[in-house]
Image 1 (cartoon, one colour):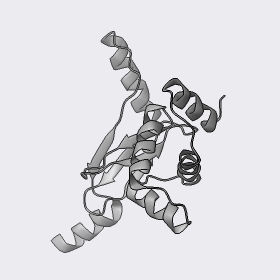
Image 2 (image 1 turned 30 degrees about the vertical axis):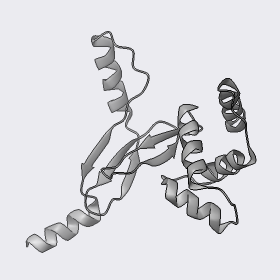
Image 3 (image 1 turned 30 degrees about the horizontal axis):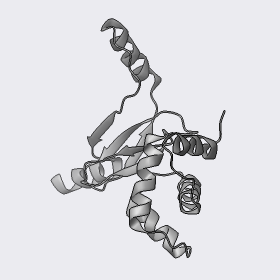
Length: 149
């Protein structure tokens, strides 16, 4: 299996782009973090670590990481994107709290199996899917129940 660096370098080469020190720093920082993140959070993190990388470079590099298949862009009911790793991580879906914004990752093999059956039945070859269930997390649900009483 190719490393994340090799995958990104191959992608950049195929697009006649360079693997710059800035792109290397962004790639490293992104994969040091194992949770969802926003581009602006990454910018702050890099600057706190004395890395002089422009906001435009971060956004362009994140777009390249998505196109290379290393990252996925996800939107959780807000108007801006979050990012998560695809490389080296098992596929998962999301539960998103409408109140506090908490994101719970889950994997349910019965759902995956059902999706495969639906695709087979409809002679459809899926290459990806995203499942996001909106609602209230346990804490917000309990707070809501107490205010109703």
